[in-house]
Amino acid sequence: MSRITDLKTYDFRFPTSATLSGSDAMNPDPDYSSAYLELHTDAGEVGVGFVFSIGRGNDIIVKAIDTLAERFLGKEIEPYLENMGSAWKELVYDSQIRWLGPEKGVAHMAIGAILSAFWDLKAKRANKPLWLLLAEMEPEELVETLDFRYLSDALTPEEALEILRQGQEGKETRIQQLLEEGYPGYSTAAGWLGYSDEKMLSLAKRETEEMGFSLIKLKVGQNLDDDLRRLSLVRKAIDPSVELAVDANQVWDVPEAIEWINKFHEFDLTWVEEPTSPDDVLGHATIAKAIAPIPVATGEQMQSRILYKQFLQAEAFGVMQVDAARVAGPQELIVQYLLAKKFDTPVCPHAGGVGLCEAVQHFAMFDFVAISGTRENRMIEYVDNQHEHFIDPVVIKNGNYVAPRSPGNSCQMKLEAVKQYEFSGQKGDGNV
Ligand SMILES: [Mg+2]
Image (tube, rainbow, N blue to C red; front, side, top):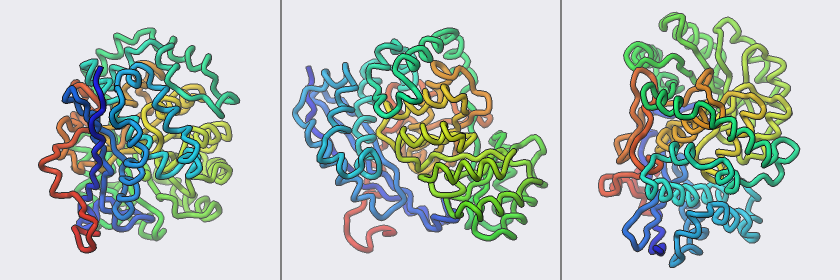
């Protein structure tokens, strides 16, 4: 038996707003940040988890992780690792904390960081990357860790079990395919709104011709004339086989979204992302109908599996974009993938930021191996940001994510190097 000896949090903030990398219609000057957690045991092990944010307020998330994680100090780790559902229940059903959500916002994301650290440790002990650990768990064992509350009108534990049992067929072949070929990625590097046309075009060429991505995404929604100009410039510059998507980052109301997007039909868009509020199920359904055949994509700021359920039931989107640090960790992500399979909807995870690519690749790969069984119409977002700070960073080869082989969730940072980005809380520190 080992005991948890420390749950150490860090407030890391990177001055990305200086280059306008990450700028979009809603977030003009993000400073990519990580509320980072290290869970230490007396056996000398470290499990890590984090929440991504874009600057101010990262300290609030750190405080939430501290408040929630405190209960585990001095506890034996094994009972949790053997029954991950128990850690979920302790955290999600802490009634006083639950009042802050329930199951949404800062407290929920903080739970995600803690549960991620547990799963990281579980994978490290099994000497497997997280995607493989999940794929090799028995369906019964995995379903046991999941919470189906509020979902039974859409997905029951029995249906989840059936999906995972079906996923066992051909699993070994898919593991080999994944190790040999990787998992498709797409690039957002060219599309930031703060970039000049020249920078956008040279990045669009680099990402498709040199990096090998088969889809690139542009930010839109600030000015219609600019959007039309940028879209036609990029469409002409890239190979016709390359797909193009756009992302409005929630700026529009429903009627405005419909009017604006309906001016984009000539560009053969693969999706329009986050047209309006991530909470607006019926609004998205209205938009989806009105802009067909362009599919609506959303999910990076969707607060829980319950909203995903409603979006799927209402046919409010055609592409589901899960985010590894928005919900309560691996168990909720797995439920989201099971819902997507039940409703036959492709998942193209949101990534970029700090650590989001590293984290979410494990769930996309697990889905390919053990849930959906396909990579068709599925790809993980990629941006070349802050990967150098990770011990086991994502690797892109010919536009594909290379399957991680190192044990764990790939989210552990090079602590000594990254400490220079720790926010002191003082005004004027860094860029905050
Ligand atoms: Mg987006």
